[in-house]
Length: 291
Ligand code: GLU
Image (cartoon, rainbow, N blue to C red; front, side, top):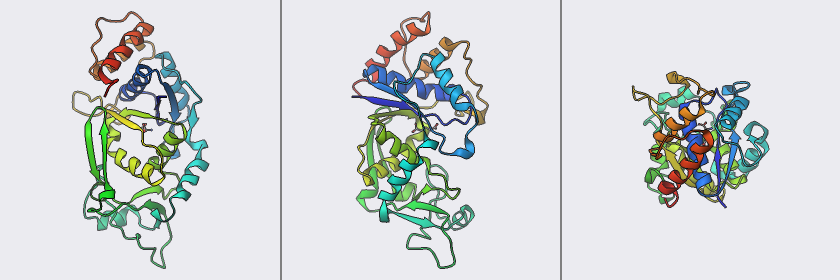
């Protein structure tokens, strides 16, 4: 049974970019006669904005997207992340390095622009140093285990060398919060998610997530990363680039824009939100069902 999800971080209202991820995951679930879940990813509590989760859920409902199950919230699920972390045993190690120390000693930059961890604390903490964060070891550059391959249903075949592109990455942060990379794979496994459909900004996180799924012997979902909406300056639409919250009073027009962004052509303009879904689901199915 297909299980999909939309997993917004409640850092503000839904915007055009996050609507594309919501719409694509919903269309894919419906085209597969599957279930679609909403999950609130507030694990980074410092970035959470009060009221944003409810606002997102209400906006999705106004657009015709309602969860098929309980809406779970990451900040209430820390025991699950802690249990998964404990299972990692020697694969994880405490790290005393501050961001500045890492930046000062860095040799290369990771795909997301962060410094690749130089491995200072890999073989144990120096006696006068205290643990700040916890990292997971990735295999060496030439170790085939560290070469993650997957097929993305939108982007095609992807290969990433973890040591070269990311390095040992943080699972428990210096501020005490669990890292997104751990929380997301624990939740996807616990909720039985078979298909992850989300924005292409998360494409480069996928190899790390697959690596953790392998270490924890979780089944690996299929992935589809939708290329992000960009504005006319080529910037991703998000709060940082000044994207306006969606006009909840005019869901049809926002949905039409989002579906056009996914490259789907509808035969004619639907007259209602219900008619929009009745047309968009088969159109998505035709393009992505067998991919
Ligand atoms: N919470 C993440 C975000 O809003 C999405 C995580 C995911 O879909 O895996 O960017």
